[in-house]
Image (cartoon, rainbow, N blue to C red):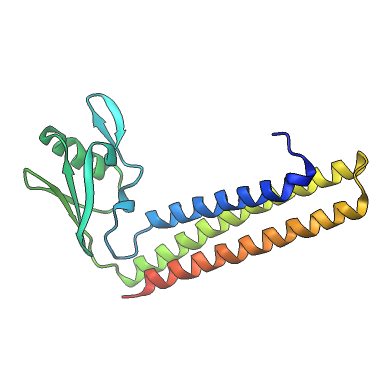
Length: 187
């Protein structure tokens, strides 16, 4: 990854956006008591001997806030879809009616809500660790460039810009976690 120091800030913003997007995807997988097709993201179904993502072998939708409906494109996939959901160990019980696989989302207990909040905060902390690692790489890059002849005061300016990008990202991460926590704790 060859980066010109003048393009470092744009590269940093792109990396920050990737970190935030990853966090959003991880938070979407944590259920908040409402049915969401994102809860089943990453589940792979045995499709004629090939592990295939669930959303590539069936339509996944939410007819209401407490139900996920899965309609396979081939009726023969009902059994493998059911098995894949059980194997994913999400705490959900699929029901096969011959045409659809339906999953009723049970109400969350207070204890389970607290566990989900803890899990969300863990994902936020993971995002911050990734951000700190990226920040460390950027700062090392700037210091290396300064040693190789880049003006020191311009290097300090770049460091300040990086700090600004990192602070704004931490704020975004905290906002996402707070919103998810509120979503989970809302009964």
